[in-house]
Image 1 (spheres, rainbow, N blue to C red):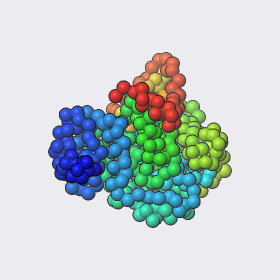
Image 2 (image 1 turned 180 degrees about the horizontal axis):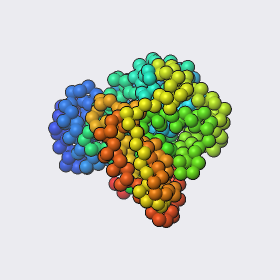
Image 3 (image 1 turned 90 degrees about the horizontal axis):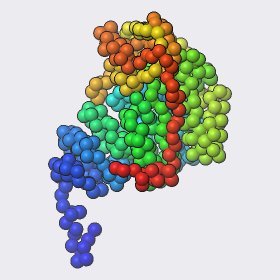
Image 4 (image 1 turned 180 degrees about the vertical axis):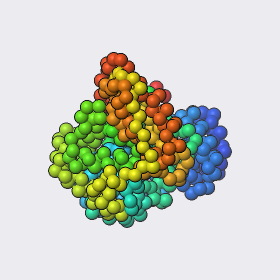
Length: 470
């Protein structure tokens, strides 16, 4: 930018210093697009020390980011490295992303379901964050499965299978790779703007034509307040649409773990059972919610990908792909293409070898009235399925298998859950957390919590943001 006399604009030419940017945000100031790009590029290149990035994250978490700042951060992070182009695939590229949950394994279902119906699914996923599990950690419980592919390898798998689930390469969205790990270690996860920028920077870098967002609500969500979850959903839809990606967001229930299993390997086993056409478990162990939500999300993906006129007809196509085995075939093809050994699924119980196992039983008779799902997520993490520090290994066999879920009637002494851990020393704290997290009542819960409570499209998202008080 130049002035009328063609002299450089001093504000845009002046050197930037990270300490000034930290102070400005700490004091509640609005950062310019140039300042935000400086932060993102500095994170990507390593030129900004981690302690300064951590300080900036905390300032942004406390003071908040405006809509303009959020959009600028999303695009700056997207542009901080290489980007993938799906043009040569010859298909519409559609993906799904969740804001994070416990037992949330829908990616293993929706990716092959949508691919079986003719859309390309380039899915760039993350690792465990806070109390939530990581898609990549779960996939890496398959011997040999490679999540770190080059962009050329990523494209090759997509051409062959129609779907690929990978990690960020060092060159793809490097700013998020650094900031994502820092947020987990600095208590700055639960912020709508930081969540939006992290999720969308990866998705937009994948060159998506369309995106379906699964924004969690309830006791296991990063944002428990429904209004905050709605704001996050609307913010992500409007931000992605502004960047040219057709997007829809569904608010879904995370008032209990999704499905029966929460961990790594055991979540894959549950997913494969459904992909094999097995009907959801009945009674207190029912995982109908996992099957239903996966079909709803896949239905939207197929619709936005132009392979169904409506989300409802997309659901029907997805269910057909589930029942005829085509989605399962694609999942196995993807695993093999990325180096995974699919033979472990032939006898999943034989492969599952946790260090120790303990069954937790009901301490009294009654109904499961509530589940503190965030606490249950921490129990899973402390059994060994998650990590305390970035880079720590996780136990693929650790986790919790739930035998009774919200609303179920249980008798004293009946099993509530089975704990899997690396060693006996890891059982005590998760057992105590689980017992505190499950509320038993003499009466059944009165309210029926809908699986999907609200859907945001571009128009409804923009209207919501206009009316939101922030």
